[in-house]
Length: 452
Image (cartoon, rainbow, N blue to C red; front, side):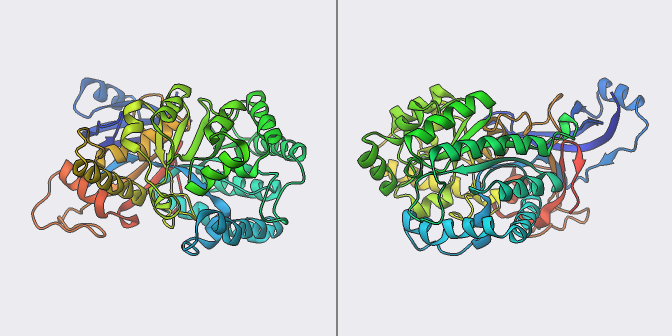
């Protein structure tokens, strides 16, 4: 084992929900494959011993800075980055017709445009501190492989989904049959794996994902085939579940059952499943999610636009449902998971206010530390990744955050009017509330520092 990187300074992570550890003056070592091999207090005998046996320079994190695991984005429509921040005035099904399908069709037909859009998307994710992302692509494999390559090239972990949909309200944007859709999904899985096959296993940052868009765009035959393909290929599954009232009612009218039952009937509700939104799931349905170990991508901003009710986050966490955060570009307009964290807390506080007024006893709120967990370790766990925490054996996926300089001057939006010493919970909360890209001084994925 060869140590190639050594850090000394403050580490901040959330090993479990509600737990935030500020590890002051610690040593962290990373091996040549990008895995953490040692974490411990700098003044301990163990640290002194390991430091005596390495001959590489130590990177010291300034007293006003800290290392934090990178963020995980559990729900993002890559082609919709094309029209991010526009068209949010329509209800969901109409919005899909007039904006989403058009953008996806546009990138499928213009490979050069897809290259430009996806390269810029990768840069934006890197700059926002997102180290792992679960992506919806399009129905076209060429465009999806361009997306996968863009993420691998810039160095971000990406689980890329080739959209499967044999039903559509837009005649020009639909696959010809369930069989052709299943074959295309299998081709993408193989192509995606081939794309990274020349890399060493620890440098393969891309995974394919089975991606039925949602029940209204998928026939039973297609969903059955995708469930079998997911089992045969051992890949993850992503979709949308119980997102909006009109979508829920459409499924009940057409299939005569809830969409959670449709997914479950076709073996698409498993420990490898991540379902976006889930705002219309009741307590029994959330319990089913927990028992199946299926995860939820909580997208508070897009829920505010396209769902008639908020996601029951506190209840889901209490039931043991795995939950992470998603930006849902472009149903949500911000690509920064920090905004998703803030919105998750704000929505939960509003729900808790309603609970108080109605006489409910159990709090429905979450706090900023719980939101930070969801954005890091919680999201990683939902994706089946071992990152999101600073412990031996985990990949070194980290970002360096600077809050103030030696002169006590705050960085970016942060202002301080008294001398600062170290990293406290108070100034961490300040950064969580108003920090931005200006506080980010570096990002590493699998031990490799990304070019910024």
